[in-house]
Image (cartoon, rainbow, N blue to C red; front, top):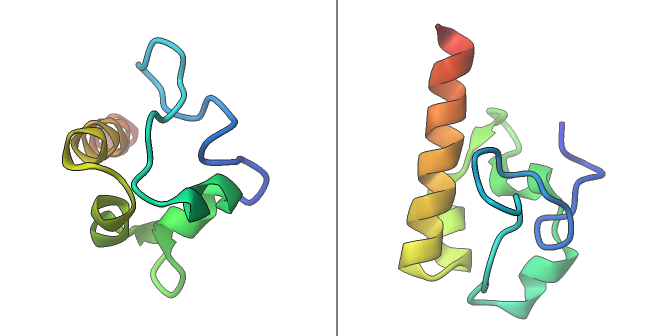
Length: 75
């Protein structure tokens, strides 16, 4: 899941105007795929890693979007 979707170059965030992620803390984020934001063993979002890679405000937006998308799938 998300192995071909680039975190910084592809519009993968739903409900975001452009679907893109702004301003990472680390330049290493530019080489990550969306699947790299997940815990490899559990296949769940790694919120701690997201918070480490992005400024707090951006991480909050990402987590909110991911969490709201999970809730929509469950309903």
